[in-house]
Amino acid sequence: MKNQIGLFTAALTLTVTVAAANASANGTDSCVIPGHWQVPGGEVVSRATVIERASQAQVVLLGENHDDAAHHRWQLETLAALYRTAPGLSVGVEMFPRRLQPVLDAWSRGELDEAAFLEQTEWQKTWGMAPELYMPIWRFVRDHRIALHALNVDRSEVRKVSGGGWQALDPTLAAELGTPAAPVAAYREGLREIYDAHMTHLPEGHKPTDGDFERFVEAQLLWDRAMAAGIASQSAKGMVVGIMGSGHIRFGHGVPHQLRDLAVSSVYSLVPLAADEVCEDLSADLADVVVAPLGGPAAADPHHRAPAGQRQASAS
Image 1: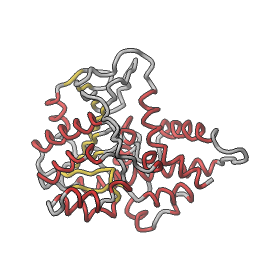
Image 2: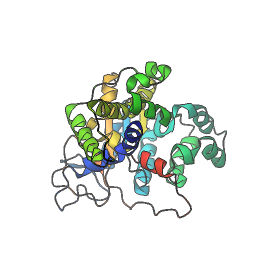
Image 3: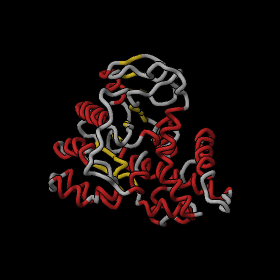
């Protein structure tokens, strides 16, 4: 059962993102006009207005679908615009676990070439997406000597929590993160639906328990809390731009919820939508602003194929 829970946890963030996107997707009109920025369910706003509003926040969260090149181009453009208003900002990212912080520091100082950066961050193992999806962002950070922070935890820690609960977490890491804020009811309900759906595919004879579900929830909270704690630790020094899967941002249930618990209340969330995402009524609490970036997902690289487990785990 522990292995099953670990697999379910690895697939969770992808499912949360898809479920949230489809929650209101029963119409035929695009949620947002491609290339436009919009307050969910409300007005279309100019890019300049969004950047001005975002520049007033302690934390700006930029979501993504990991394999969508248009999302990464939008992230880079938005990061560059924010940098012009707040050149002292730092960038926190989901893609790297904390143990790789020395490598990110060396990259930001301009001490590594790209090949060394990808090798020393164990890119194919730690993230596994096509590197060129992200390299323009990493280059911008390096070229402007922007501090780059690893927000994630090693997957071994996620497996510990999914198998043994929060008490199984490494004590040093547990002390750093503190106790996560309890998930709001809507978040738990969504996780319960995902968990129950996965349980139907268990081999005959495997009977899940309430304890299994609680560990499933705790593993998701570990991801959210770790990224929020990493951001909160830097936010007193200036604006932090967080780059992560949209499933950790949507509806304020993941990282924003944990940031509020850590007394970081000035958070501005921007979520990119798929170009073909449709909805009848875009929920006002989805994010502060949504945008449908121009362009479609990157074509699959026939020479790049991450391990199956990594492809599943990293799709947040």
